Image 1 (cartoon, rainbow, N blue to C red):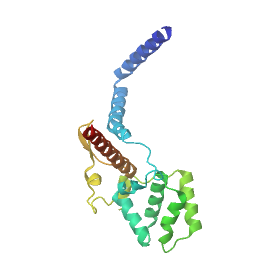
Image 2 (cartoon, rainbow, N blue to C red; image 1 turned 135 degrees about the vertical axis):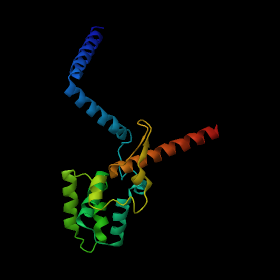
Image 3 (cartoon, rainbow, N blue to C red; image 1 turned 30 degrees about the vertical axis):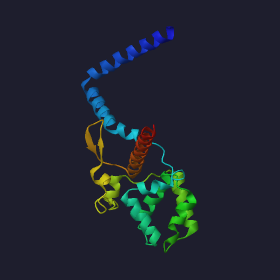
Image 4 (spheres, rainbow, N blue to C red; image 1 turned 90 degrees about the horizontal axis):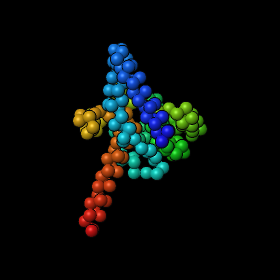
Length: 198
């Protein structure tokens, strides 16, 4: 009981302090700006869950067009520009793609060197490099949403919380969103099947 009273007292004091701070015009503006940014971004966290290629090989169908194109070039043995090489390694590392499989993906390239490729893949993983954002991909002319008429890349998704259409800002979020939609669809189909069987 005493702990509960102390906790309520602390919360009341904290709220009073926050109200006093909000009376300061400059602080109020900063607080509102931060709050608006958080509100616009927090929905993205709802779609975030661990994407692990080793647990779901079917995930490849949920890759954005930019990644699909690079994988297709690699399969055909076409040479890649430096930014494409970095991007695909960083992207696959972020999805916990097995190191040896990333190295093997590059094996069809004309200038393939297993030792150099292995070193670069391990170095990128150790450094924790993350893949380019959609904005950066556009500056490198690696965004292929228009070329492949990818609806999610071009139009984004509808945010029920904010009641607006939101753009995809990162290829990893693209994968997570597609996985989320796929999971929800599967759940819906399973629930429908259960109801049908009852």
